[in-house]
Length: 388
Image (cartoon, rainbow, N blue to C red; front, side, top):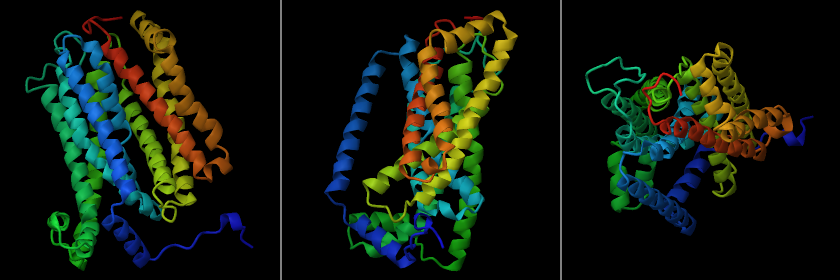
């Protein structure tokens, strides 16, 4: 006999899902507009803070460290979420279906990241005299290539989102009454009618754009960590820093996906679609990448610890032992120790609240770690030195 706690709840039919989702889409109630108002207010506060920071200019580079840390946090969480959809689609994982749209929608944050990148590039010091990956490349390095790299990721993400949303847009087009909103959706659906050839093209395009996103994301993380961190810290030589940043991004993407799913489950009324199975399945790679988080940090740290060159010992004191000891402990506890001691227990993994609570801690630890990484680099007055 199957235990009642492990019984699979009845799945809604395609017709039930269509009616439910389209009804929610058509009727934008007070709760929807309340969330729009709150989030718009927070976005306006962010713009106001950016304008205030912009008026102070770029002479004092240290004040832009938190701006870059926030940009990196978005790259490490929201902009990495489409990787989950693309990767699970390539693996043909069936359980991904309820959460794919949650992750794909976050591709739109690429536009915000590109806008945040422009003042961050303006705050960088000249390449002359400091370590960099460009080797005196004359054609617009680093600004032009950073914009191209980040812009390419944003465009691929938007293309992936648009292609995968075509059937949904067509369903909304046919369901909504005539209005300006319906006409915009009709234009965006590109005349989709759902015949066999269109589905084949959509499948091929989703695989193509997904693979392109998987390739473009490590490039963006490499540019970010090289130009805004490694190139500003004298004496830093870390060959695995880009790989470590990608691992941080995947961990942050899984954590953010779980948190968004939990919010939609508890506050959005989507309990039927975000069952415990999705949280249980995502908690396993979340634990794995939490272990990878420590592995890559230790692989980097042990090189400096055993090398003990003057510049390397100064970096250890600066980033780990003295100046940023507090942020380091917070990120180590929340990104590695807490997931390790909680997610190894099956009852915690096999729940909605357990992975969600651990994920909130991981997101806090991720932001603290980004602050430690980029604020420390932007606080260096002279990056042309050979040691701190």
